[in-house]
Length: 165
Image (cartoon, rainbow, N blue to C red):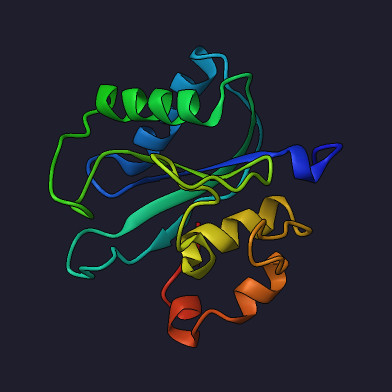
C-alpha cells in the first residue's frame, strides 16, 4: 500500500471486446510507456455488461498508479490509450476494447469537464471489489464512507454476478 493512501490515484481498466485480458495488459503497458507507474494491481474480475446484460461480459481491474500528470492530463492520456487500443466513438456504454477511468485522484473532489471521484463508482461491483483488494482502508472522498461499507451496500445480485478470476 502507498505510504499515504490519501495521495493515491486509482484507475479502473476494463474490456468486453476481443482478447479482453490482452487488451487490459496492453493498456497497462501503454500507461507505463507514458510515465504512469503502476504501484499495485488487483486480480481480474468478470462482470455483466451494464446497462445491457446481453452485451459481452466485462473483464475489469483496478490499479493504483503514480504520475506527475494533473487529473485532466491523465484522463486525456487515458483516452489516447483507449483509442490506440481500438476504441471507437460509439454510443455510451457500447462494447469496447478498452475503457480506462480515473476512480480517485489523490482524494480530490472535482466537478467540471472531469468529475472526481468517478460518479457512480461507489455502486459498481467491478470497481469497489478490486479497489478493496488493493486498498482495504480506502474512503470515498465525498461520501466519507469506507470501502467495506460500500461493498456491504451492494445488492446480493451485484455480489453474485461478479467473479474474481
